Image (cartoon, rainbow, N blue to C red; front, side, top):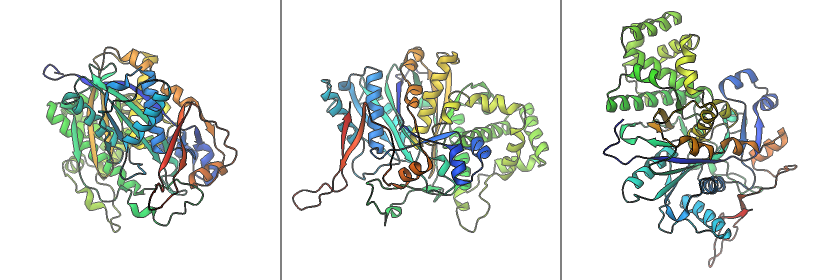
Amino acid sequence: MNHTSHKSIGISGLAAYVPPYRVWLEDWCDWTDSQWPKIREVVGRSFRVRGPDHSVYTMAANAVIRLIDQYDIDPGRVKFLGLGTESSTDNSAGAILIKGMVDDALIARGKPPISRSCEVPEFKHACLGGVYGMKGAIRHLALDGAGGQAIVVCADIAEYARGSSGEPTQGAGAVAMLLEEDPQLAVVDLINSGSASDYRIMDFRKPMLRFCGQDRSESHQVQDFPVFNGKYSTTCYVDETLHALHDMYEKRELNPSEYLRSLRTIFLHRPYRRMPETGWAVSYLFALSRGNGEDRAELASYCYEAGIDVDAMLTEMLSKPEIAALATPETLQYEAYPLTMAALRAFRASRHYRKEILDKLALGSDTMLDLGNLYTAALPAWMAAGFEQALDEDSLSAGEEVLTLGYGSGDAAEVIPFFMADGWREATAKIRFGEAMQLAIDLDREQYEALHDGRRVTGLDYLPRNEFVIDRVGTTEERHFSDLGIEYYKFIA
């Protein structure tokens, strides 16, 4: 790792907000006649639902004010406030809404607001918007924003139609990160990162046409259900992960199998429990195919167990399939690497799987079973949970490389090495992610369905404290004054 010619820039802090309303997936399985053992294995334990007075902007502002408080940030030094989201409900404004809320709360406390000369961009690319926001902040700090601080907040509401295959993978929340020179938590090594992107038509999209005809008479919340194709989306995730890793291997002149074995901790985008395991395991099998005789022998053993021809699988791995060509209603074959996926099933049953895959994804993974999918916030949330567990167990060390992989449908991926900073323990002690998860109100079926469908909910025993909420939504549409659909916010101390 050579940072001598570049300033070391990275993350000094993390803070999170998750709404209190919780659905246990075991309960949800009872309500929907779904199989709890399978859901537990593939998806997780529970998920959070946004409340009637929450929007993606209030959750983001809650995470940002917590970050400022927990790390005693001087708001006047913040010259970049980026929002990564795919749940925007305003097609014009973005991060400025968060700045406005946070400024009002700071002034009410007698504190200075965020700098007036602060940039306020929003980044959108499915679940990758937050990572792109982080890269934008680091480039800002390396150039015209040198000497200042940046905050990037990742906030999303993942919701799916009731009865759809995506319903158990819902979630809501926000994670804010503090970025600066000489970071306290981890150096972000953009120089040696890998990128990939390719247009994938319809694995996961949110066309505005979906909003037409929605009845919002009881609620101001627009339902943001995506158009998605589950099995095809898994193929897209795996393929883009492979390409981003390949880009990094080339840049750093790495031996893939040696490098992957050398890592102790990896954080990947996590839409649900099984997806990062699959993405990382396939990456490991591809690395074996480019390795030495011992690596090839290990790979051949999985092929033998799966009853497939190793040479045919190696040919498949080199084939560079056109993933977008699979995106047609006539195509029943959504699998770009069918032989590799067959070998993966054998690999899962082997003794190597725990050591090379599960153990490296272990930090924070238990906490993540209770979060659901947070879209842009899923990766930083896992990192926050993982760093806290590492602090408890003393299982990371200063200078150690931790690999992160962000992904966004549509499709793009970013694989970025992090190196733990000398002060990571002190910085981690201020994250308080476990604390953010503690407040929970369990929903019954009627409450969940009403909250989900945008109807009035009875019996929700929750009074907000120290958080932003939607105070009201404008309804006026006149020539001299119009505020139709505009949210007004307040901070409840």
